[in-house]
Image (cartoon, rainbow, N blue to C red; front, side, top):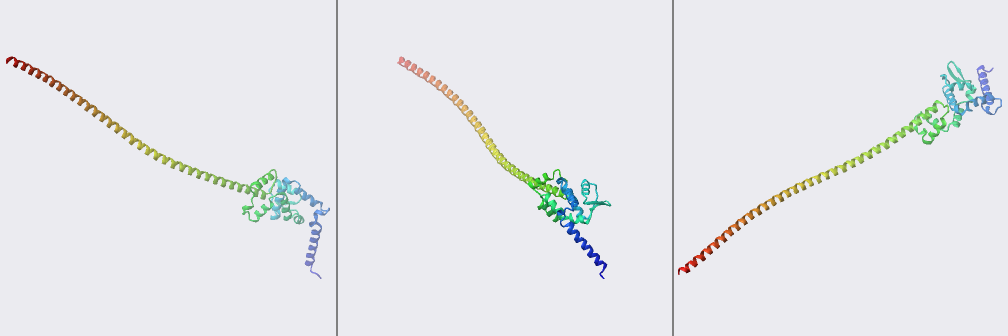
Length: 275
């Protein structure tokens, strides 16, 4: 007789096989699985909220359950029928749903909705450390425009925010680098200006010294010329006085000579008369 435990295990495997073959593996091709298609459509039809719903559901799959915080995303996710609230926790409604709408399905759908899915996944797999996966430039601007008006998951918001922050930090560093270069250039220009001013001041001082020396020389020359002229005038006056004196003396001598000549003539005439 077979062990009841073995029979139970076989029964479970048989049921699991039937469920997988009839429901899980090809549910999208089966007309009977309309409720699964309805759940899928509720999750994906509205692209403005699909990323947020998928992100929240992804957290539930990864953690088995999450604490209810009464957010609008939680309410929308519950309305899809995919999850249920139990004792303040959100859980997947049943194991069949968890097997059909599993992590692979979530990541595949997210990859269709967001163009940066591979970057985000790689960043998460790096332990949120590798900044090389961040969006930059045109891609970041594209993501910003795409995210505008959409309800995203916490992972999306985190990834986009750190991408923005990293790019801003890079731009700040570049701006600071340009500023430092400008300051260094300004410093060099100021140094050159100071050198030019120093040389100019030196030349001005030398010029002033030369000018002062020239002025002193000119004043000295002027004083000497004035003194020489004064001496010339004084000597000239002295000579004139002496010349006048000599002329007077010569005139007096001439007069005396004339008188002597006249006296001698008179004496000769008197002498002749005596004879």
